[in-house]
Length: 102
Image (cartoon, rainbow, N blue to C red; front, side, top):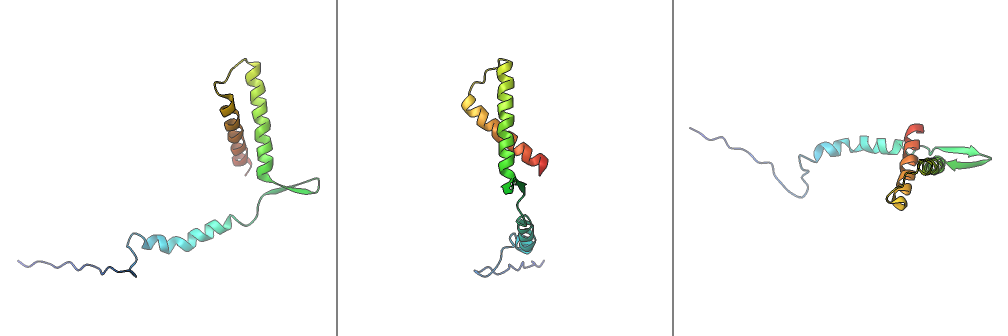
């Protein structure tokens, strides 16, 4: 019975790992996707000035938070940690507005 010899691939400083090779082949495609998002920033012309869309979304998020606070106070619902809850609610509304409109 003869044994088959398994030939190992040489390892060295210039050799790329077999696990890393597919990722390096796909790197130009990933770079194209990343650069495609940098084409323009969404802005609105309000009274002659360009305002970034994230700023408008943040203002809408804060206004929705104030509306929610007013509704909670009207229903006499007390929050345990309002200093933590309201900023988190404002951020959630801001991100939600951004996702809906952009």
